[in-house]
Length: 125
View 1 (cartoon, rainbow, N blue to C red):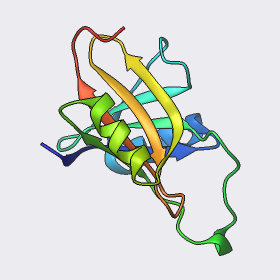
View 2: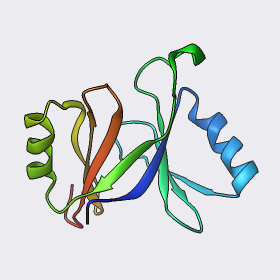
View 3: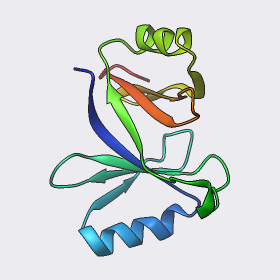
View 4: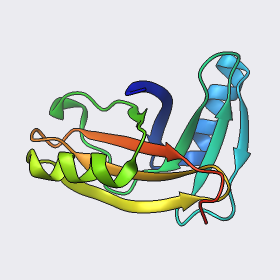
């Protein structure tokens, strides 16, 4: 279980990045209207992912890595969240439902790197 199973790209202009990645890789983007943030599912021939509206300002290039956020599939969202917080992590975006798919949330590690966790749950609402 605890393996990277989904990737995400943050963007200050998601429409621009959708066109960019479609043009280069031929990925299929599906806008998710029910999500609490601007979000597109990405379907590839391999691992699937998502593209979301960046929740903060884009860091300047001289600030280091500005990368994708990986989401890790876990057996139990709440237990894993508790472990993250007990080990010094912080909530970046609280747990939310991706309807009929999973529970998702985002955290910061001790160096403020963003990562997500998700628990597959077809009853998530």
